[in-house]
Image (cartoon, rainbow, N blue to C red; front, side):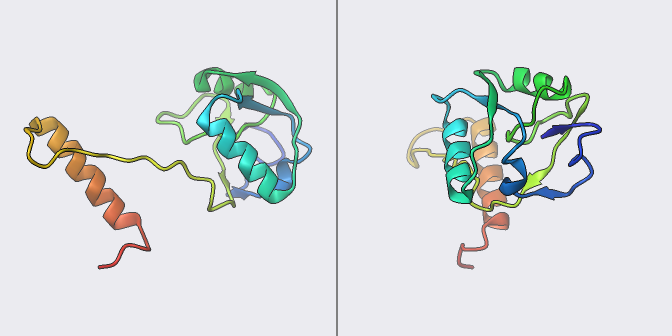
Length: 131
């Protein structure tokens, strides 16, 4: 994520090598998403300068919008003013999420609908899942 007017703002995708010299705002080291970011930096052999660490993604988005740095964050549910979201070229930069339930237990209709939607979305998107 970068701010409007940043040199990369009109790009569709950014490589990690392009972030090497950019000032970065990031989640603190205890956050899972920070560990994923650090792993990606190691894979690409870059060590961008971290200028701010925080615990709140919305705060980081605000700092990016204020032109204090760039960030590698999950896609926002609502567009944040002053920022542009750009994909990275790292296909390994994902956060696995699991949904579980006990088959012989009651599941409220809302939970069952969520489960069914999540399972269907995964089935539609996973290229490795056998037909």
